[in-house]
Image (cartoon, each protein chain N blue to C red):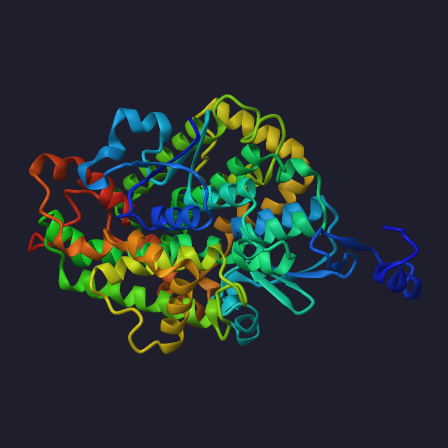
Length: 293
Length: 240
């Protein structure tokens, strides 16, 4: 940057405040044009994107898409993301979904410090490995805990069966065990001595059950210590700010939930998956006729 | 010892890695881990992958699980043609987006379709209720439609004009229900045309070779009671 020739120089001549960067692909990207980030901080993937963006002073407009008011189902948002999921990113005309893809995009475009997504082949692979594994093995049980322990009772007025709760708690504990034994082991952070995207995604997922008053960090002092390191690396202020709305979810007046929104939530695929899917236990996976259900 | 890839071509993610490595001339030792014999549950294999899943990679002392991570590792280490994982910021993001989305959606549907339609009844001797099978196939339908409407749209391949990791992962997933006898391309000419382009880009012989086992899934002999007992809990957890 700062050279006197090339397309960047011409653009900067017209707009001296313009920041440009080349990411290595040959194209020039406008850095100081604000992104649109469509988020609700109740969602763990949104928190990861929010924290990362704030931490690196990435200019963005926070487009609040209120999950509790059913905004993901609004026509305006469906135009952005027909899958009605959060977060979404809009960079000029470019729309991107999936928090993992968004985090990688932000790392590359804004040339964030390399420890977040290290260039070393082996260390980067560890980040990619966790980012892939967490979708099914980590995020789902954590989300399910909040649905079963808090949201379903609040929305439907009915408690979930003890058996389903026990099964979900067991799933969460198992995923925490795998996290500790396979990903964290005896290291300070997942990749070693420095925080990376993997730790950020892990910690926001692990915070999710807090909304239902389930503290996933109590099981293991190693994980609790890791969490403190991650929080300090991020900055406690930013960490708490990002988790504020989640921590207040239990106090939200669910009687104000719009009936139309309630119906949409209950029909939502992810709700169905988290709640309605039968428990996968050899003795209970069968219907009355003995067949797999 | 060079690169070792621990695979069973019965598994969708293993097929993607097999095709990618072969297509790009990446030298590797194939270590077959026979899933239906429960070899992934052995102590020997857990030295390679304590999570007891395939695919797994061993490169000297370095071990790695998760097919997306393995594909990215091979991409970076062996400097494959750019189109597989483009340098261009936005094109690369499109590949990342698909690779992230598919875990809980198309992959899950394809896995459940195979197990509910074929593997439970034929291999494990466990009948599946018609309602469950219908629900699974309906969900598969939704996800295949999303693949076409949101990801493929009117492009030649999922992330743009050229084949990428996204297409390889998607096509190997779709061959799962195909192996179960589901006609996922029927009534979907756009997707069928994409499938043909992917097969051509990969090379027909390699594509057929990688899919020989899954296309014979209906003919697997039933599991003996010991194997069945060993496999059941993990299978049920896997297809949740």
